[in-house]
Amino acid sequence: MSILLKIYAHNGALYYRPLKIITPEPINYFPFTAAQYDTNHIWTDQISGRSLTGSENHMASGVYRIKDFDDGLLLNSYRTDTAIPLLHNYDYTSPAALLYGCALTIRIKPGQFEDYPMALCVLYGEKGEYNRNEKLVIAIEQCQLVVFYCAKGESNPERIETGVSLNPQHQWTSVGLNFHNNNGYGLAGVYISNHLMPLNIMRLKQFSGIYLFGFVSEDEEQYEDKVIATFNGAVAHAKLFNTPLIQAEFKAILDNYDDSTNNGVVFTQLEHKTELIKMFLDVKNNDKDNDPPPPPPDGNTGNSGTFPPLQPPGGSKG
Image 1: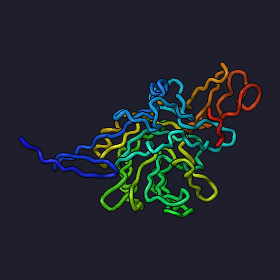
Image 2: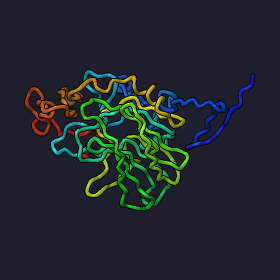
Image 3: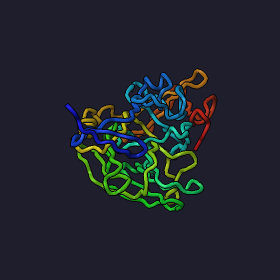
Image 4: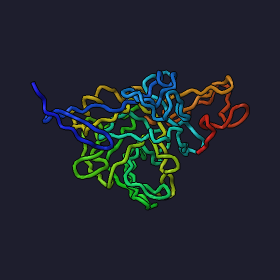
């Protein structure tokens, strides 16, 4: 028995599939679990074994375990006195950090910096001079999904509303993104709350790669008087697929998760000179959750005495 195959190239990779049969398959999977944190393999693709850092064992700064929760990590975010997100270029800015794919599924919980757009992922297109590359930034701002289109060589991003909202009452949001359709490159649709919404924000002239949770080093964008920050919040189960997904396929992947679980405040722990500092990520569910968290047992807030200012292990304050 013979099978007819279609072989095609897309986004820097070769794919094949039986004619008339479309079977989406994950081509990258980053679980972002406590087990990966403990073994220094946070940025290791579980499918190919490829590391985004170009190193087999590498712990990127600004990533923390969530206390008493093994199924997700806290990325570059914890309570600060200024309510300004921490801006940090990761150490995985090698060419290996760029990914390719047609759809993304992921679970997220943004941090407490509601007034700042935070990049969930960046789609790169045509290259420009002086880091002014064409890019489409898919970001979270005030529990809304927004898109910024940055034309090659231009310094004034176009802000595009999507009408997609995250449920602030939920600890997690399971979201799916389709990155292209037959009309071009960009954000074709969003799956959230059991529904696939077509968007067709197809601004990119070409598609050279995807960067998760921020920008290529020194390639940040500024919108009005605020920098579009790297993602600050909890992340889990990021999968990239070789084809766009339909609603039933997104549902089969994401509806296995209960986003309403673990309501409250997310805690992470950082050990410093044998002392344990508790850091916090706000989850605003009700008035009680909006109250500031208690200080560490000795009353030290981390900004005086023997504790250092709250900042990533690399010392960057953003």
